[in-house]
Structure formats: structure tokens, C-alpha cells
Amino acid sequence: MKLLKMIQCYILLVILLRMNGYTGVITDEEWENAVVFISGKMDDETIEKIKEDIKEQGESWWSIQHFGIGMDIRNMLRKGGFDWDDGAIDKYWTEILQEILKRSDTR
Image (spheres, rainbow, N blue to C red):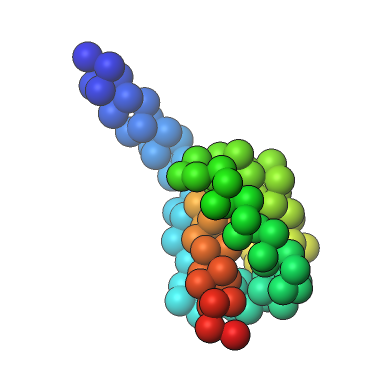
């Protein structure tokens, strides 16, 4: 029964988001531009600190950091001219950060 209620809530959320113009979809070019833009705002020391925090916080790091580095990244995207709806920014900030961290390993 709990699962059914969760599914119903999720469906309702998706319907409401789409009614308000949320698609949550960005192009490959927008993705790459965002990764390059945000990574350009981070020095090596910041990247290493984020890696340590993620290691310490485990799988739930993204929820712990939603109002920390997550807010910083979302605000940088907005101020940087990424005209994405809030749903897309919320959806992609963790993936953008993970891509930056992955790429930093090859520097």
C-alpha cells in the first residue's frame, strides 16, 4: 500500500511539474557548457575538499549537501546564464558535480 501511495504521489508531482513548464531536459551542449563553467569556478583545493566530504558522508552526500555545495552550484548556474527551470537545476547539479570530480582525476 505504501508503494502505491508513493507512485501516486510521484505521478501527481510529474503532472504538476509539467503543467508549470518543467521538462528537466537539457541538451548535450548545455550539459558540457555547465560542466566547463562550474569546473572553472573550482580550484583543486575545493575539488579535493568536496571529494573528502562525499567519502565521509557516503551515498546520501547529495541530500546532506543540497543546501551546501548544491546551493552554490545551482546559484552559479543561474547567475552564469543557464536559463534552466528549477527542476532541471535541481536534477542536474549532482551529476554536473560528479562529472567535474571524475574529470579532475585525469588532470
